[in-house]
Length: 337
Length: 288
Image (cartoon, rainbow over all chains, first blue to last red; front, side, top):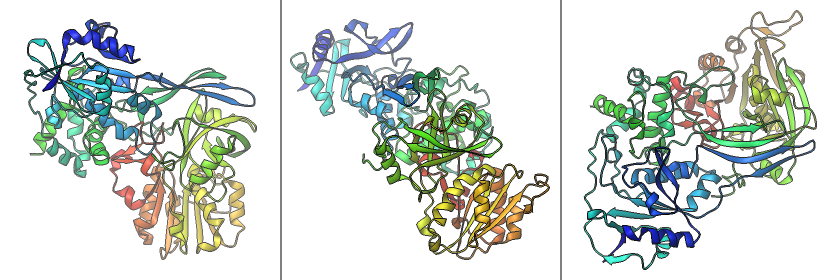
């Protein structure tokens, strides 16, 4: 016997979670952009979409966040630390690719030095993932050896049932079980047929690509110039990438008081690596695109045994010049044959 | 996560507050600040972790942080010295800090020169221009335990006589009988009373011809100088494995997260900044 969460019980579940002091967060449409935000009622959730426009990383690594407030006096500097608000949260209805991406970034943010902000939010959040039963032409999780029902990073995995009536519940972690014990009694003990998973064709050969990228001869290949010729360096692919984690610090304020912030940055920008001397190790857009591909599919897996890509496809879906990781890796697959 | 890797820090991005206790003009636009910790616990943490070659992020709230080496040696941990050229927003505001002013520091980060492995060996230090500070940290770390090393040779060059940094220490090294100091300036950079060499570091090094036998070289300088000096060291018979250098890239976090300082797969902030020439030659040249 398995547990089933019926869709018409969702409002009761949300009330129970609220009563237990949890914030409930899910995909909603705001200003015509689908994104994760706190909800009060199940009706606010946007289940119609394949994948929200904005990624789940917004919840753990926001576009901008204050780190410290500083006050400079004659004899002392006072700093006040801003930490994430410290509220327990449950995310309902994330997609497996987005959730995998959070698990991918954990070893990076914990690499010897633990990023306070990332891990505070990670430990305060329970993630309830819904397996995908539809995909679009940009989805490519299977190419990354993931799947429309990958459990990586999820606390609970839900599989949609026939007739849109609810979900089969798979409890994956202790944290997930704790959160779902709060809705004990609202779940049905029953069986049901889950909808077939989305069919996502494999688009490139990941192993062949890695091998090609590891070959030092290909670092200076003319391929990089050709494939990135139309890149305008806007950074959209990095900002909408769930695993992209690069950031910058900026101080906002005047000489005496202000806030130090951590902001998203992007390897697509020339200033990202520019030395004070004027020397720039990655001075061309092709060098920057090469860095992006190398980092995701060669350097990162070399360090953390994970690809820094979970196949959400946003980089290609949202690219203003119709480039993206998919095309690059398809071309590399061809080159490696 | 052990305290050791985290350097005992709770929030890894929170800087320590430092007081400027000394300020020196080294060369036009180049200044040295000597900084003292205000929080004894942070000072203890620094003393526990700092080894020569490591770097830090120096800053002023409201302006930002900049990455430079710790220019003072690991044998003198009561303070931190940093030497920098005034060129951007942060370095300009650091340059205008006066004695008694407060600045910020994060670190020490990165790896180090393995000077225990240099015990009993001859040392050859080669530096160009503003790259003497990282070299000077190693030099003093060794000179403060002089009896553990063999012959010490220092080759230092700058564009002009005015651009030589640590002039007072150059004079001190000049007067020591246990150091061979070779000073040079680029052709045209000499002053009327200049009594040392004129020429670029690689050719001056070849003329000085230090023996590669039982010798470790520490080389710091601008990329073009490093490139040609490595060729000269090769001619003199030095093995790439016995030549150490530091790489310096733009950094924001200093702890392997912000994503900009890597050369190929190597993160300068975590796996560097100290590398052997053999390690550098394995990095993709197009990323340096």
